[in-house]
Length: 152
Image 1 (cartoon, helix red, strand yellow):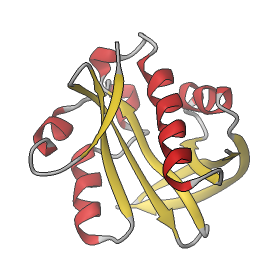
Image 2: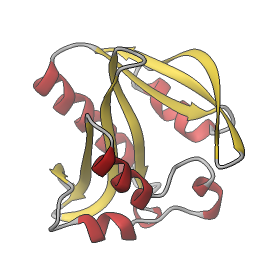
Image 3: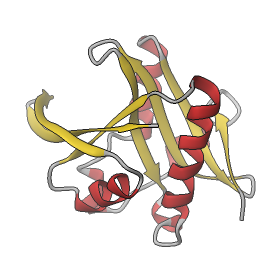
């Protein structure tokens, strides 16, 4: 079992779009197709596929967030068929190593819905601390999330 990353580009974007979550998780994570559209129109967004033995099993979108003046892991998901196998933990550990190698030991932000206990617990295992709750609205739906940060 080997976790690697590859940028999302014209050769693998369909694989990324086809990744899926269970019904409960869909309320917590934007669809990958939305994330890929964002990368086409917003600056400083970096989409990468999570691969296990050359098969895309998940997706990460990270970016430099001007509002935070720091780096953020905006999206993190593992396909429903690869969950509960330790893949998420391995992928997050590998992403942290990738990030440190590329950018150095900086603060890294992420966020999780206040009722997404699975994501919060995973992030806390890697040293992320809850910073504050923030709210926003998308297409008439209100969201409440914890902003979390780790010093790498």
